[in-house]
Every structure is written in structure tokens, then in C-alpha cells.
Image (cartoon, rainbow, N blue to C red; front, side, top):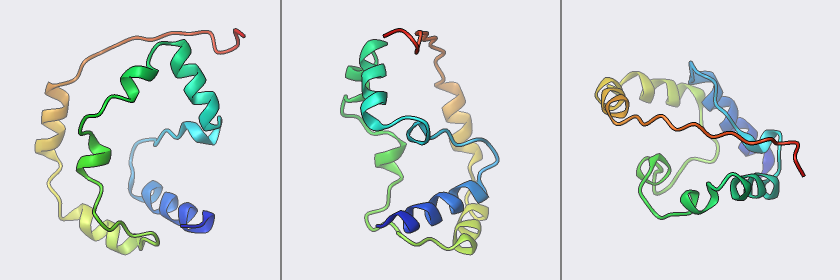
Length: 103
């Protein structure tokens, strides 16, 4: 997948999302993100093996050149409400703080 395919896929995602999609790599590179995670003591947790939305919902053969019309059709035929209710029931609030400018 080249960068133009990646940008097309991101564009499709953005077009069907009603909430902001946070992408830390837009403002920082991976090394910076790992460094911050280590500093705020979340790195070890983030590397634990468990099923999350990335592993549960990733298809075996993902499309590298998605078509917006296909995404809109699939999204409109899916009932998200039970999943949203389950996610809200299992929500935990954790507060983290760090001074990103401390070196």
C-alpha cells in the first residue's frame, strides 16, 4: 500500500465518521509517541496482547483502495446500537497527565 492508497483510505474513513478521528502520527512520529508512552507509564499496557477493535474488526483481506459508496452502504446496513450500549456499559474513566515539554 503506497501513500496515495493510505490517504484515499483515510479520506473514506473521515467521510463516514461523525466524530473526530484522532491520529497521533499526524503530529508526532512513532518514536516520539513511544517515548511519551514510556514517560507516562502506558507503554507496557499498550503492548499487552488482547483482542481489541483492531484485531476483532480487521478483515482477513482488507481493501487497500476502498470506495466511499461501498463503505456508506455497509455502514448504513449495520446496527451499531447494541455495540455502543455494550461499550458504554464497560467504560472506565482514567485520567493521565504529563508535561509534554519537559525534557
